[in-house]
Length: 209
Image (cartoon, rainbow, N blue to C red; front, side):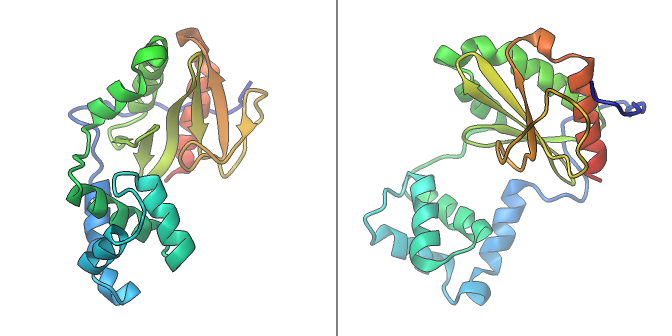
């Protein structure tokens, strides 16, 4: 059982946004604005370089790997270039709800209530929690990412937690994914999102200040 003191959360109103914390779109814009200075190439130059390669422009993972392996491009810049390349090729970024719907469709549909229970618990922690959609997981951010939820199999959701200070819980497993997680908890049913899991979420939230 996780041992920590629970503190009251603030009432939540409105959508999950955080004042002063840049959104993924704002971070991409910032990286794009400085890419010439940092890499010696403009974004248009990088897009043309990828388009001239044999990499599928719509496979953003492949584009990022190619940029890293062939050109030594760093992570945030990889993401910005891959995003721009895919956009030029006709890709449209899904909304947050579209990301969630895609991740919990078909054989993973039975796990949607588990995700919803984790989402409710995470958003209840405070009005400064923001949800962000990714292709394979949904993250929860308070200044920095403190939790991420991924449908790991058709019968299990992984709740990733960023816990620089580890807690004493038999349910915590060391990990490097999803997201920026240092630990994860396996969840197979709504009942698994219990007081202990909510306490672990609270700890990750508190440590993300």
